[in-house]
View 1 (spheres, one colour):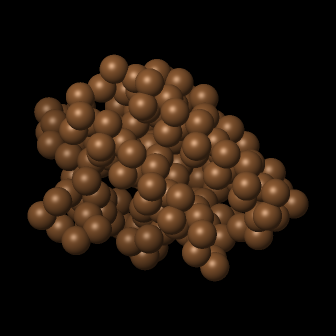
View 2 (cartoon, helix red, strand yellow):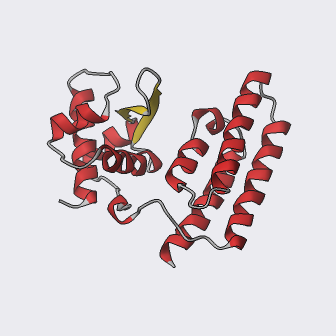
View 3 (cartoon, one colour):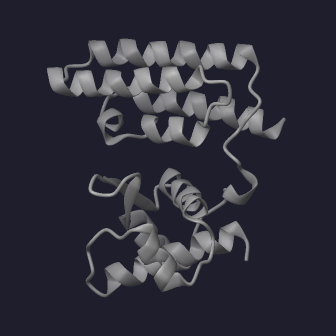
Length: 186
């Protein structure tokens, strides 16, 4: 099986859940049990990250489980399965999450994170939401400085619902994605 067909299997399973009235979020073990996918939890997580990036799946942090995530299909994902037109184009099996970024590329990402800080401070957010958003940016900045940054984890931080509602952040996140995609293709 390819990563694309595994993504389609996951999406079709989440579609069946919602179509039969089950509106609860589900876990990776639930997905594995009901789809007979035999990849590691990290593999399933990478596939669902791609589905989330495409807007077909939504995830939530499961705080009662260490590192756990909960998944549910979005309206766009539901419509895509119904129409038989699932636009999944990313192949996570080829993406290890480790890129050899040049110092210039890293400095560009640092600059973009600095712009994100300015957008957050100028946004009219509550003190708590501002503090949470700044903590996410600070965490991403610290992870970038590690010898071998785990880009999926950094992007997971930046895709947080805390940042998602701040006007101007999405375009900056896309700029980081473009840098990472350029590094992945080289």
